[in-house]
Image (cartoon, rainbow, N blue to C red; front, side):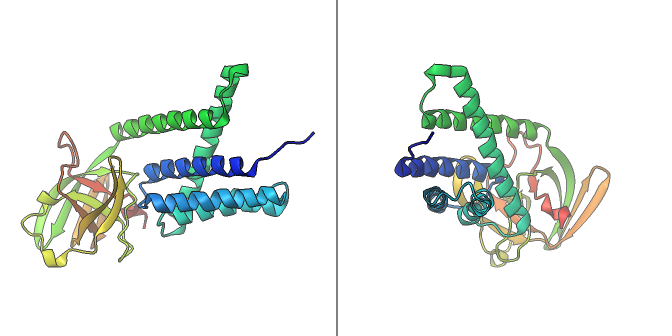
Length: 262
């Protein structure tokens, strides 16, 4: 028994699926990148996979290692501007998780449709839509259970009491100082903001805004009170936003969870 493999069809299917999966992972992790970088990562990933198939290396130990680990790391590293091994591992793990979930959804749809099953690329597209909707529901549920905490910010001799949202999805980092970035409403620091102290703009990605830049400042101290514990952070980096962070005004600061992990 043998199968006919059309390398051009295999390349195109993997290219599209890799691109859509990388876009989904970017949305989940909030990584800053561009569509060009994602297309390039998907292209190299698909091309490398086709090369392994062409030389019949997928069934060998080196081929398995390259296809299951090497290509994932390559695509994630190329698609996203990731610094640090922890976030790299998170991105690779999330890419695998999304791939497994997508595969399970496609198999489930094939079983439900039976002999009337649609082409693979149609099922994959529908599966990605369902997976994206599921992730959106999960994010909505997570936001409803988000932890609010009290924070005190000292900036240029002025003390501000803020309400912070402990957001595990905030993975912003200052590319210059390699520090986690929290986001605060700009009005909370006015009029003390000194334009000459503004840091290098922080790149970010969020739902509704593909790519953007945040002005940032470095405060003196930030004190966080949460779950009976007090954390003191020296020289925290704060991204400034003109728009309210919360629709109901329940918080005005989004904290980076790495503030206490480091």
